[in-house]
Image (cartoon, rainbow, N blue to C red; front, side, top):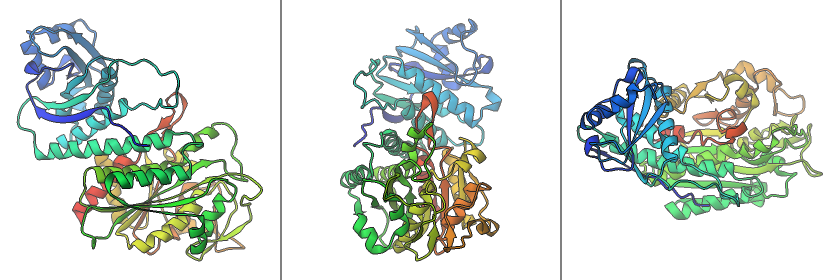
Length: 503
């Protein structure tokens, strides 16, 4: 399934009073303080903006909005004033609130194009490129829709076709242009990941993911290989095969390669957990909210989205998306608690809980990743509920066997505002994985569940610089806003680009 991207982004320098556009988006701080662009527009409108603010209809709180139509003296059809909060305390969260509010307001209008002057405002300590990236991603996310499976679609205003990130003075820098190109590609990759995550599990099966990888390969001229069950059996991927035994859907191991640098340059390998539906297997999950287990392939969708973004921007890097994908279902052929399996690495695992299946498919994929002689390996997985308990839905859990790599990922998370929090990976926790009947157990008990899961994976990554991202709390939202967040696509792309510069 190919995602179409309705909004076209551009960036240019233009004074707001002369701008002919469907909507002029201007920032206002608390107390009615106008940003530079808003001051220029107000001067041309002979104080009409300040007069509107004086009526008290806009508080200036971050995310508040006020729409004005047909303002005399301005060429724009509409003016959307957006609150930015306190001018001296503009932080990243407030800035992103303002961007989301502006995008949501634009979504309800009939404007075909808009000039967004918010991107020339930036939080303290951030450069203009950061603001540009956040603006593009905020608008793209707001205009994302998943309604292709509905027969009765909600009538919407004419779609916004173009958004210009405008600056009121000075030439557009190369850094800003580069940030726009990167963000537009990341937005495409995020929309792909979001849609794959939102698809129901009867459509988005392992075979469907494999077909999508092949479509990406044709679109971007990538190399693709899909290993089938017989290939896994021949290789000896006993852990991955144990998870899929109860399902009628055939498992797949997807290898998608992007070459944007010299062939001699070692690749970054991104491994994405692709459980397209997780019942827990014989260790069956409770029924409540089990439908959300369609999101258990969010690691897979995020690494495919990241690779698509890198290919779209023609990034000068080599990267591989490695996706082990299958279903975890109960049945007469399903694995049982107490089974012992032999992994691709030759190590044996006692399966004490079949709902700890993500680490079983990932451990064989990590061993398989060694053959690519990677520069670094990052696995991405909705792995543990324990990580949600520890970090909630704000930060992704980060584990790594190399501190320099962990620092790079943390820095990329701060730059993309797709943040992580590093958790311990100490040998002290390994004892919890002790088994009387195999080299290790696949669970370590309730204490430090996300840590022992990462410790399990670390046993299969000793030959590589490796990091693990537990996205169980950040990959999707529940409740009324149920849906994929496409995290950590922005983080992964920023890391790969940043890592290439560092190297």
